[in-house]
Amino acid sequence: MEFLPAIDLKEGKCVRLLQGDAEKKTVYSSDPVAVAQGFKEAGANWLHMVDLDGAFSGTRRHTDTVKAVYEATGLKIELGGGIRTLGDAENCLRSGVERIVLGTAAWKDPAFMAQAVKEFSSEHVAVGIDARGGMVSIKGWTETTSETVFSLAQKAQDAGVATLIYTDIAQDGMLSRPDYSTLSELLTRFPINVIASGGIASLEHVKELLALKPRAPYGCISGKAIYEERLSVREAVALCRS
Image 1 (spheres, helix red, strand yellow):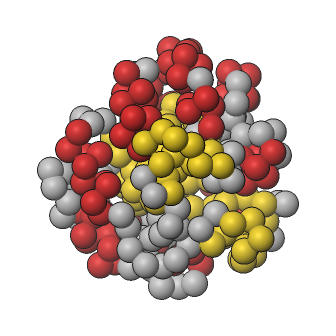
Image 2: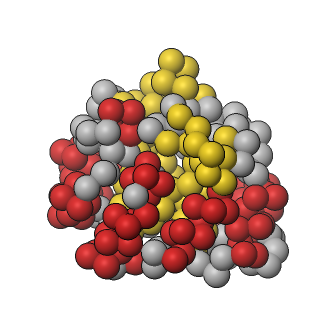
């Protein structure tokens, strides 16, 4: 299992939101590059980044910051937030992003999702499934749809997507626990990579993810717990690799 520390960008700063609420944000650093360098020094290979301004507005705002992080660290970056067109996707990949994450666009237009996989390969395209009460949320979690997690996962798999990133909004930023039940069902029903996000706040949570049936997730993401020093990137990376 891969451990991915998270950097959420808003107005150029590293922030964390409470359950996706833009009004409940905590700023942890004004230097995303330095934060990413710290993650690399702790042994991380991957970095999960979200352009929150892009997610809320539909227009990417942090391309230069993401490029600077890549050039300074060489980390593999997966990036979501405001990627709505093939041009957006191509610009992200050219700036050093290894894997783009489609959220709103994947839900809105499954044909676009399939086209992105065809254009850039399944290796470079993931789908982020952010859910509230089992229903998919979009546009920076400001709208909840009538689509279930499993319905969108099936559409993603049918489109050739190889990686899903599942986030339980109710757990995100709460330092509580991952949504093991939904994760286990995703892992059972879909033979593709699943990355867990939301509520991962301790080494014990990472251990429990590794022990999930029928298999461990492909990866797990943590943010707030790292910034508040409840979870060590170095220890989490070592545990995942062991």
